[in-house]
Length: 222
Image (cartoon, rainbow, N blue to C red; front, side):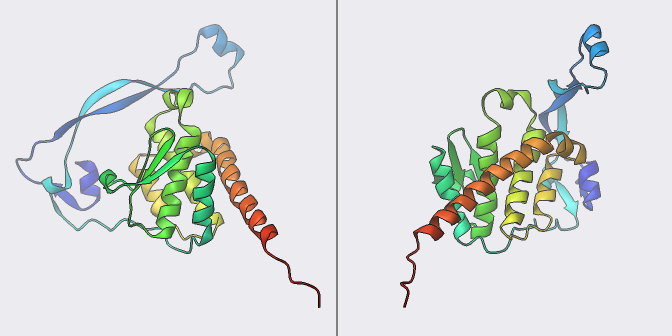
């Protein structure tokens, strides 16, 4: 209810909350002798279990209109085609399917599904986000990280790559990260992997531009 109150809305009288399971995050307590040898190392955050919490759907509330979500704008141009080519080169299947709505994209491990009807700029940003999941959040690393960390990393990669090609993201990425309760501390912990993955994607796009340029016919000397 507190979040709805912050948005200027109130839960209607008599409404019953919807029970969901929320993750419980704790610290990985190392053995005493290990801690003494590595005093500078921070205890890793791990999933320790789940607890029942109650949430309320927007239909159960009254009050101020919710702000429209920020959109990614700008000209993706040929960068979208290059990104799609890079995705396919990684052996990742790409599909468009409206059944994933209201999600804009989804990653299934070797397959990315996008919601059709998005602008080129939105499609580019969504595809980078899902590609981030494909590159980072499979096998061991998926089980070693929380959903908050995974979503923060993927959206940060989308923000960096989008800005690099000239897209205007506004508050879209920040809004998305806050939706999953990501914060500056999480970003700092994941900074290296975010930067490395963003650099790989941008390098691939740049390489394709170079290849396209080299294939263009040159004018004969007069």
